[in-house]
Length: 236
Ligand code: UDP
Image 1: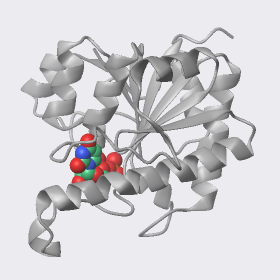
Image 2: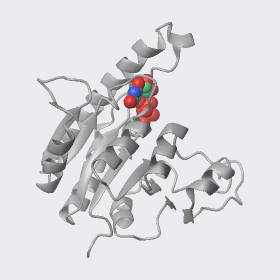
Image 3: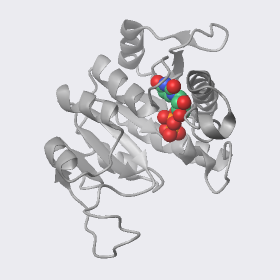
Image 4: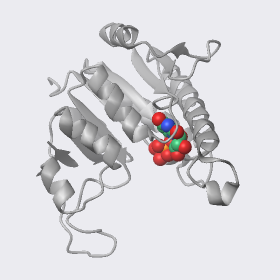
């Protein structure tokens, strides 16, 4: 089967790595994700990944933590590197070649982020994990995902979540809510639907980078998405 996309950027939240726990990393989730990612690399898809850090630390709660926002944000970025290392280990365990690139220099554990080098790794079939977000406080890993996806000329950004797409309303509150198969950027804004934060979202819109929101926790869904099946919601 020929995949629909040649190069993708997969955005995973840190929280998705918790599984049933309420903090940290669940080895079962890591290995499930690693196997799903391996399946699409076996199809010849070039895969870049941006991972969040919310399962370990989020910088935005200055009032709660007493830690200044920018300082907390840097702590959050370090959390994404821990997650990136964990995912790297899980991928290598199933035989996938990887490189971790960090937006904050940490030579002993990750390459520095170098755009052209990342593209070269992808061309060689290595999965590239981008750690430390954008390297700047006041941003999110969704924005890092959009930014890196555009930089590496990914065909699409795949936002793995716990829900299987974008709904007309919150499906947990209204059982009659229906899933959009496709929706335009303008309609998402017009209807006030939440896909990503505005910075990340407008970056995609301005650069014509389509977004697919899909349920990453269902085994095999990632393969269906890259095969062009009607899974999740396509924003374009
Ligand atoms: N962060 C940041 N700049 C970035 C990316 C992330 O400052 O470019 C910080 C921010 O504090 C954020 C934390 O890292 O709360 C973890 O990332 P995020 O909340 O996006 O992770 P997710 O929600 O995907 O788990």
